Image 1 (tube, one colour):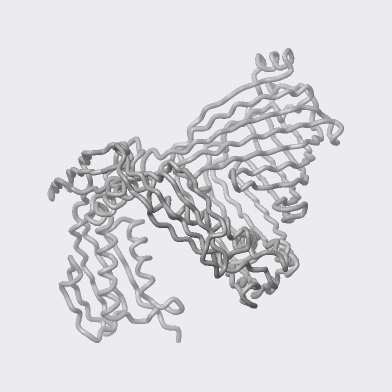
Image 2 (cartoon, one colour):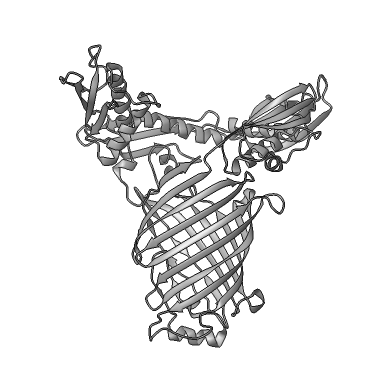
Length: 606
């Protein structure tokens, strides 16, 4: 007979809060099997975790009532404020436990003042203690706890240290807590001290087992001195030696001279670089792969046996293996052959090959939308991938399919085939688009930019047009186009961005020589900037300058569709007259979007 696991319930902290608190208790149970009965240790540990998380949200004096239902039906109840009030009787066999949360007052910063700030603005300083940048100041974004206060003081001191103020110190001069309202008034004193700079660095390089440097390089600096700069400079010296085949390079930096000049403390440093033995790369091996072909993995890591061992290239190879998307983990191990020869083994663990996501959404025009997105990775064991996305709404049906072959034309250049179909009910007509194409894609890591160029062949149709629909140009044409997309993305999160920007440029050229019936050019530049407005809501201003020349552009392409779920309507008659006269139309739009988080449900198959 199948046993029923013990029930764990949390209430009193809001719907989402109850869910998050209950999820935090999952770690207390064995991952492979949920327990039929809980014991006293579980309840005491759970109380400790719950109180910690509730206090971290600013509720410094919470009360939790634990109601226990035992195996024999008896019920016990205990009240907890600090987790140490009770030692539960043992043994206990608990079939159900409910934690009722009485959170009490939430403490928040009402006033937060700083004294002595010079190199950091007050707004920046406040950012280490509360969430800033919101148009509306909510209590939930200005939470006070003693732990957060100490963390903020440490972060503020660290930020000043990074700017070169080695002796910077931040401390609280006054703190007033109103236990009736939860308001906290705090005053913080900042003592920056003098700024430290690096005046010069003498670099000495030692080869294996040598006691005198074979190269000495004096360098004049005027850099901010801090432990962060020291870490970066140390890594810089190591990296240069890694490229030359010295994987065991060690760097030691010490101060030769330190003096105060005006308002600065100037440092003269000595950097000693012990490079160790120069090492040659031996055998490159792979372990753990089952479906992925070794030839593809060798192509991705780009290492040649017999060359100098460059730790940077070896790590880059590991990163490129992970980018295939077929492995859950990629581990690296060096195999010592002798003092001057080492092999490399990449240990991989293959992940799921099929990922299916259910999609749900709502739009002002299309109303409810639902669909799925399926991705199949590592096809044929060659690292190929395919993606299918199908979406149905009250106003439209769409489907997209993409097949990608990585590194087909040199390094980091992917080849892809794509097909798409769209049927959408617009205000003035029924839009139908079918077609596909092929192209090349490359991502430039140093500048965070995607570039793709593709040939697309589409069959366009504007059906069920209304009497007012502007009919001029080719009707229901076939369109052959060359499309170039450039995307520069500096957002902090691709799914739920809070800050940053994204720039998108699109160039589309259609011509009869490309197999179509029409000729036109379109250029579009879009910009997105993200900034938080208030909790859970994101501001997304968008600017779209656009221009086009279209002597024979089809009517369906004349229809302007502003936004993801907005209406599409033909260009007014006055505008079309101007187009005919000047053979082009520039326009721009500025919009704002309010974004809320949504969810998708996933199903994976090995």
